[in-house]
Structures are given as C-alpha cells and as structure tokens.
Image (cartoon, rainbow, N blue to C red; front, side, top):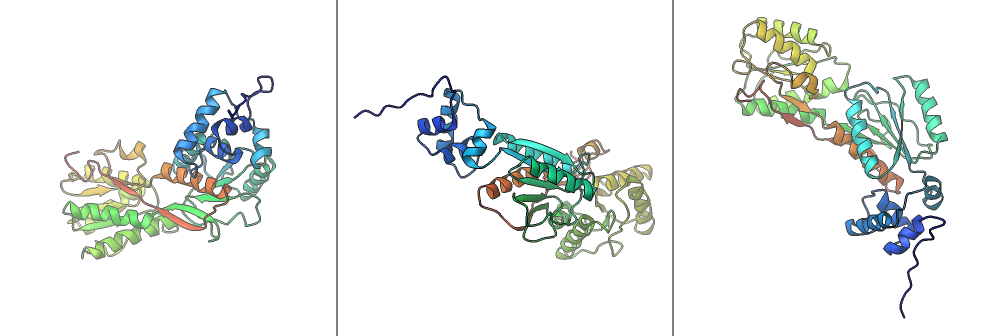
Length: 344
C-alpha cells in the first residue's frame, strides 16, 4: 500500500505540524531543530530545515508558544550596557540566540537595583523563556532568587547563590598564563602593578601571578602586588616608583590594559626600550588600547564573546529541562604582541 503524504493546505499556510510530518519527526523535535537546540542530530536538523524552506514555513510565535510552551523570546539584563566587558558578552549571547532564531529583549539596569527589579517584572510580563544577567565586574552579585518561573544564567558577575548557574573568566589562570609567557621569554625580575584591590578581578589576577612566580622559583619584585586604580595615571605613577626603587626589573605585569598604557608611556619617556630592556603586559585585550599601543601590547584575552555564547547554550539547556548550577570558570588566552616580542 502506498502512503499518501499530503502537502500543507495553501489557504491556511504551512504549520510546524506540517514540517514535522513531512520531515518524519515529532513536533517537539521539529521545534528544537528549528531553534538550534544541541540535542537534535545534525542530519535530522538539516532535514527539518530543508522541509521548512521547501514549504516556506515561517514560525508563528503564538502558535509555537501553544505547541511547545515557549514564546521564543529571551531576556538579556545588564548593569553596564556601555561597558567594554558586558558588550562582547551580549554580542556573543545574541549570536547564539540568533542561530536559534530567538527574539532577544535587552534591558539596561545601569547598576540600579530598583531599575533591575522593574526590568525583571517587565520581562516576566512579556513571558520570556529565560534570562541572562550580565554584570559589569566579576564580583559576586545577589541572586534574583529561586522562585522565578524561568531559568536564569549569570555571566561575568557570578551569582552569590551556588544554586544558580554562573559563568566567569578564570582570572587566576590568566595571571598564571601571563607570567608563564614572560618566564618562557627569559624574564626573571618581574613586578606586578594592578588596579583596585576591592575588585575580585584584581585579587584573582594577583593570585595567579604570585602562584606562577613561586612555581618558577622566582621572587615578586617589590615583595607585593602594587594596587591602585584602573587608570593610566596610576600606571604612570607606579612605574616611576618601581624604576626608582628597582631599576633592574625586566618585566612589568599590569592588571589591566589601561594601567599598562601608563607604564609604556613612562618607559618611553625614560628611554627604556620595550621589550628589549623591560617587557610589559596588560589584561583584558581591549583592542582600542592594546593593539594601538607603542609597541602593541601583549595582554590576556578573557574570551568574553565565547562566554556569552556559552551562557546562551546553558540557558537553552535549562529551558529544555537540563539546568546547571554553580560557578563555571572559562579559560583565558595570552595574545602576544610587540611589548614582549621584539619581532612583532
């Protein structure tokens, strides 16, 4: 007996059920395939996509909501929309959501707890399927709570509640990596100048630096990390003091690219060749500073766009009933430029 496969009714337009039937899968599988969910086999996903394109299927938000219990929208709640850290994370997350054809509602709380609660209520009122909360620093922040009806993933600023899912860059490992790079280039008289010690990022980067130096059997010149502010002005003043007290240093690890830019300016003024006499490194890979420095600055890249994409993937998994919990630290990488390698 020959099976008859009916084409969709042209008067009502193709539906998700039509796509599922023609692709030979369930409605739930067809929905996951079109939304880019990872648990669908690549061949199955492609078959569903090919069918959807062939019959000119355009998802209807209300119909999809009724069929799979989701609205196809997610919220991105940030405290620092203009920040150089939060924007790459948001871009990575939006890239991942775009692959899944999810609509994204972006809200900026501007560091105001009252405004954040207002935006949260508004997003819940729009029946978003999930939420990513992006902080402006890596210091822990208060949780939005466990009573929310949707999954939440925290990016960059971890939740203080270990029951939540949080993604942060591994600043400790980044500090170790930059020292390992300097040691590999023959540096042995290394000093460390960082930003405000009230920030977890400054303390964690310093921890990585001291651990790597101890592992290499080398001293930290000056006997301590010199904390100050995340500014070029602090980088200049700290570098002046270090050169006066320890003129034999051969490398300067800076806690941020801004601090490193100040250090490079002082070394240039005092006729110190970089990297021949003193190598200089930064942290953050803020390219408007690092790539345009004289010489270009070797620095640590926190992989913020990748962090944002992974946050979206974790949110997708939670929306599919596979939540994660706890703090997940993502690797950093050293970007080598001319401030540590004279050949670049």
